[in-house]
Length: 265
Image (tube, rainbow, N blue to C red; front, side):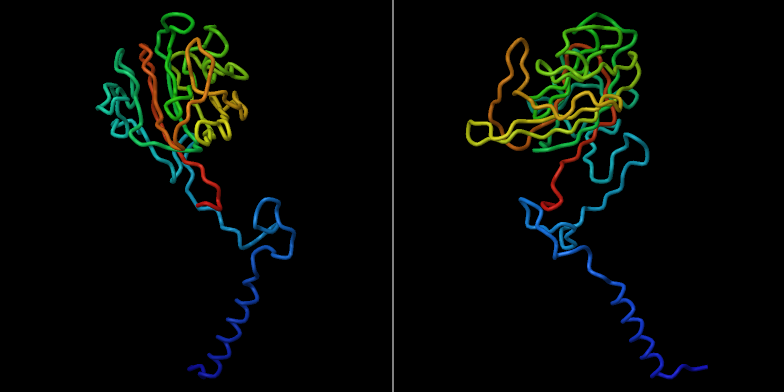
């Protein structure tokens, strides 16, 4: 049976009216402004967060991450001299070779980042204190998160695993046994400078094996050995570096996200 054209037209009009009724505006514009912003409370006109795909499993990189090392090559890295790195790849891990120097990202990131790193200390363990499974993760090439085998191995507190080296010990020692892979999830707010002056300092939150060990800690400056930390002005982006300290520490599944406010995306 053929439906009359007039009936089809009326049906379309009613459908459009129903859609218009359902398409209610998001949020409100008659509410107070949020202090320090141009947005009302529950403002539907505020930019929506970007949609990303999270990793399939815990520790997997989300869709907006830069994967620096996936176990196959070191193409995202260089020596700190700009040359090809001398680190080796063994069973999907980047391994420091004694005397190889820092493994430095060829690209710079910042000012605020989320960094995921998995690492394992050598087994069987060898040495004590700072001589056992020593390495480090350097943010902006300047601020060190200590890597060290601290499983039943004591050292000075601001130099143990997950310490902000030379500044702030971790809240707890969450180390696994040598040979077992450990995770660092680092949220780093980079410092801002005005000329030679620090406008706002750096902050770090760190989870070691899923445990909060640094809770929005203010950094006092760059890393030094046997010296007080101090800030040296630098740009809003910098490299990620992994330290060769003479111990064959293994690294895998390294990825990074630059953190940007929704309004700036």
